[in-house]
Amino acid sequence: MNEHDHYIIVACDGLWDEMTNDEAVTRVHRYTTQLKGPKEKTSEHLVMFALEKAAQRLNRKDPSLQVETLQDLLAIPPGREGRKYLHDDISVVVIRLPPAEAVAAGQAIPMSAEKRPSKWDVVRKAIGEYQKINDSKRYIMKKWGNVLDEVLRDMKN
Image (cartoon, rainbow, N blue to C red; front, side, top):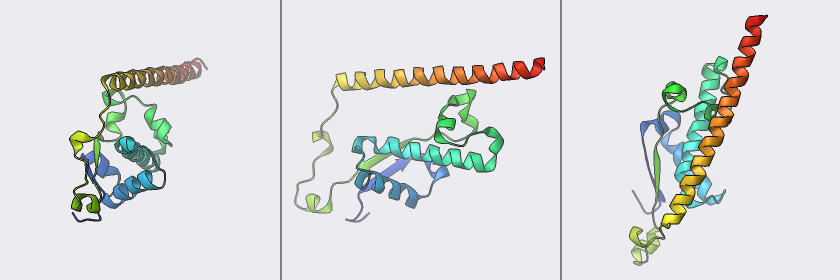
């Protein structure tokens, strides 16, 4: 590490299967500086980018899977029912480092002093995630229902 480093990216092999170290660092830097994304969503952004790259890889390797976009990949249920065999699990933590000047001047904010979300914020976020999952399940069930209807129609003909 040196004074020019801004982040530490800690991730499992699922991330590194989809991108190089340089790609990950470039993506995080672009997200936080050019796109001005919320810093607390940096890890999530990197996971979504890895999934997008996984969808592109799957489309190149086996177009018959019909996984052309990130949305196509996310429509497949996670785990043994679907995606487990298409890409590895992806876990990421991006740690922001204080600027070297702030550390040298003793102005770096200790991690414990950073604003932590309230319990209510955590509950609200969990409810929102639960609603997203339910919406996703409804979408998947509808999509599978359409596929089954199509198969049954083909069998009748």
